[in-house]
Length: 462
Image 1: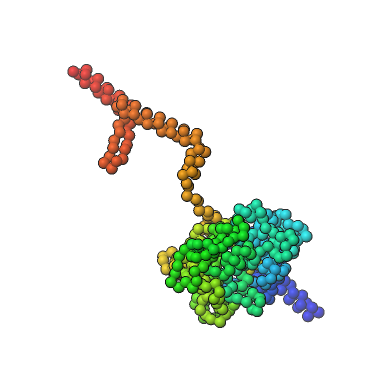
Image 2: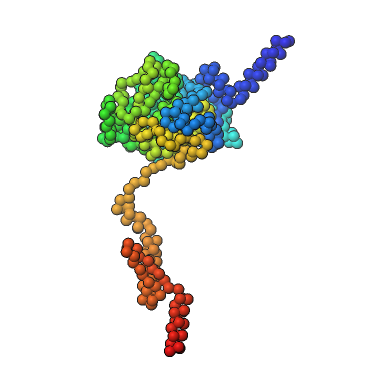
């Protein structure tokens, strides 16, 4: 009887602990489970929840909140309670997770979910009993975004022998971590913050583990028009340490996303102030300001030297060119709330990149420092650089607004005529200063009348 009672109490205690979200994450890590969650939280975290995630930084001195120290301290936050999944595409693998994290939410909204694959509750914005067996539309890196709006891409296209995407390592495996036999190791190899669904052609032919950088002369022949904004070729800028003269430049709308993923990898996988031995699961990574040979590889499991990837000067500016958009922000929240339980700090605070690195890859040492309590979140929406207006555009602008232009011109002419009339009648004066500044002074009627009265009195006196 006593044994039965003790077992019952123990079971209740375990169930109670498992029901607490944060502790449940710890249990999951300890157990080493890679089963995908079947209850999916689709909500984005509130501003205060995001700031609270980085709250441990607020107790640190200013020197610990910039440069290499900020990189080191971010790792302490984003490496806690991580859960990683298999590389495969089944119901336990990364490929299945893309049905949620990389989903095209406009083409496949949760509200249209087939009950055979899960139950969507609009009041809580959650999915329960999710099976990972549906075939939703998903977002592809490197494919023109406007094209995807009109031509959404399924997880697996009808009649296809394989899924529509490649599992793209934004930080290439050969530059810091690799394989165990033929299998991609978990940890850095399956980290969802840099492992995305991407177009197979661009992944294999254009990126292909090349360093990132702005291209001077393109050598990538895109097989489709919706891929032509991706380039592979000679770099715009050369560096004395360059190992090769080939870089990959993605389309503009992906540049910021890729930059923040790369900076995340440096924050999550660094050994600043840590003398322990790096492994393939937990490599030591760094961004450098020169081009790394795409075929050289680097086995970080056998050395404490950081595995380099480049080019940081171009990647640094991509972050400023292309700010986080709603898709990237939502993906960050989905990963944090459902799968990996950590955030990409550079999606939350893109400006922190400039508090860690200078453009040339050296560490920042200025007066500014990170402050999660007051720093602006996400720093705006997706930025598209406006084209320089040509002469044809200006003519078209005038044509489209002809009535407005005519009204403005008429008003200007009327004002000019009124000023000339007032000057001629002595009711206004035009003055030109030594600096060429023109001013118009209009005499008031009271002053004019006063002058007339004064003249009358003088005449009367005479």
